[in-house]
Image (cartoon, rainbow, N blue to C red; front, side):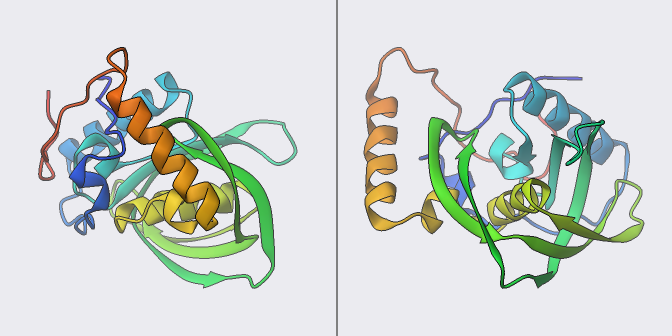
Length: 186
């Protein structure tokens, strides 16, 4: 497995809509494994393929169970939101493409999502709380939507200012540009 480069705000790939996955092969499984490893190494709870420069509709996620007895997660392919509760949850949200930034954001408390697994089998998942927040965040990424797009105006302006400062910092890690166009880069 490989640790992939996470794209930082300003990279155009983050604003592009990812393409449907049609090939459920070893390359997809490798991409998902590499994304999971990258997500864990970055201490994240979710990672969308376009965050690593791959325009495929796949994301990985991992979070503790609500009761704290274990961890659940994995790879989600071609997700489609089929229902969301009108009831909202408040919470702090951050993003691996916005290092160190966390802002309050409302999301639906419960969602239902139709998706596929790495073998192409179809599933419907009903999620609540933090898991719902993670899935909605990652699904936004696959549509080229960033969490800052949902913020209150003053928080969004502050986040963008802080990212400009981050980009101007000579000590900040420089990230590659360009797209991998659905292939796993090594």
